[in-house]
Length: 141
Image (cartoon, one colour):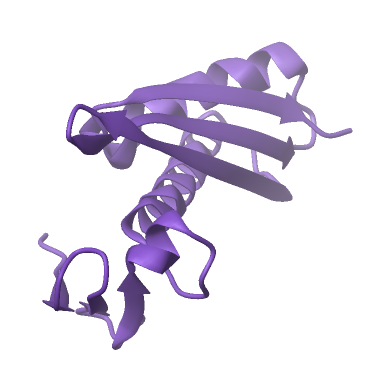
């Protein structure tokens, strides 16, 4: 399976701007720029998209881990916070912090944490990130 996306950029790094397109059409001329990435202008940026991908991938991975163990969650919610920091003359993504909260009937905290750890290790986005991945998993009663 291959998934595709495209970026088109016009102008310099600081004053230029770009648009993102995804094969599915979810991203269609989605604007991004220096100001959406390094300031607070409305629009998206690569780190936000990586955070969304990581949160979505991990949460689905956990749903499959729970399913194979015989549990059905009523709700799983994951926040991902991706850190972009200076690295010499450029930048690097140094961390992706996952915060998970879930409701899973008939499951205790220790098992939930163990299943969450399995899901983090099996999540394809976790595997591709060359960053420290942290996980804070808590079961909501």
